[in-house]
Amino acid sequence: MRKSEILDQSPANESDDSEPQRAGIQSVEVGFELLNALSRASGALMLRDLAAAAGMSAAKAHRYLVSFQRLGLVTQDSASTRYDLGPAALRLGLASLSRIDAVRLARERIDALLPLTGHTLAIAVWGNQGPTMVHWTEAPQAVPVALRLGDVMPLLSSATGRCFAAFMGDEGHDAQRVGPMIREELARLKKLPRNGPLPLDLPTSMAEVQEMLDEVRRRGVARVVHSLQASVAGFGAPVFDVQGRMVLAMVVLGSVATLDTDWDGGPATALRDAARRLSADLGHREAAPRSDEP
Image (cartoon, rainbow, N blue to C red; front, side, top):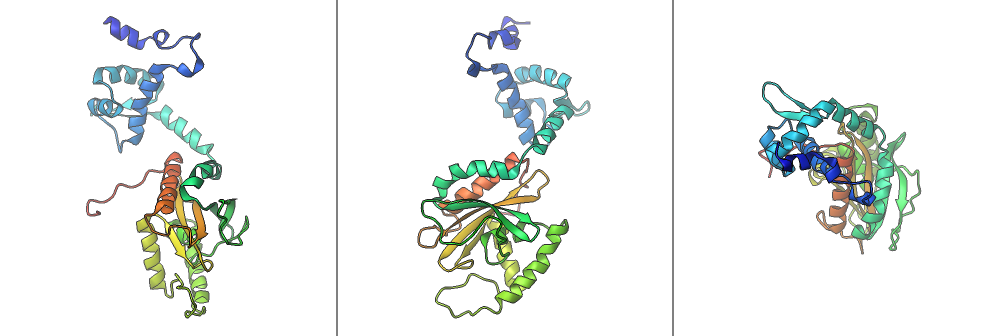
C-alpha cells in the first residue's frame, strides 16, 4: 500500500483531539458524499457512476464503500456489482423521519421566509373539520384578515383550502371527505351575488372546480384574489412526507395592493421553494417529469 493511501485512511492525520472541535474529521465528511449520492439516485449505481456523483476517484470511493458495507450502510449486488443504501442506512433514515415534527420544522423556517415574501405567513394542517390554521406570523404590513389560530378555512375560497383540495389525494378517510365538502361549499357559493365591485375568483360548477384544482397542481401552489375577503390575496403551497401524503400547507397572505399575485412572482416562488425544501427534508421525493411534459 502506498504511503498516500495509509495517510488517507488514518483518522489521526485528519483530526486531533487538540484541534478545535469545529475542525471535525474530514474522512467522515468525504465518505458521507457517497451516501448522499446514493440517497439522491433513483436506484443502485455502478462504482464509477457513484464515485463521479460523489466527486472522487473510483479507487478512493471503493475504500470507503468497503467500510460502509461492513457497517451495513451500503450493499453491493453480487450479480450487477452495483451499490445501494444498506439496511443500516435505512434504519437511520426511518428513525430520523419518525422523530420529525413537520409543523415544528415549518415554524422554524418562517422567520427566514418572511423577508422573502414581505407578508404575513401561516401554517395549516388538516383537522377534524378541514384545513385548520395552527401558526400565524404577522409581517410589518399586517394582512387585513380577521383570522385566528384554530380557524377552519374554506376549500374553494381560500388558498389554504384550495391547496388541500388539490393535493390531498384520494386515499384515506380525510381525503374521501374532500369531495362532499367541495360540493357543499359550491352550493353555498352559487348563491352569492356576482355583480359586486370586485371580480370574485370563485368557481360556479364542478367543471370549474376541477379546472381550478388542475391549475393548482400544475403550478405547484394555490392562489386566491378577492375570494377569501375583498382586497385580500394569498398563496398556499403543499408540504409532503416520505409517503407522499400532504401533511401541511405553508401560506402567505396580504393586501392585493402590496402582495405580488403573479404565479411566478417573488412571494409565490419563495413559498413554493420553501415548501419543496421542507418536503425533501421530510423524505419526499418528487416524481420525475414525463418525457412528454415541457
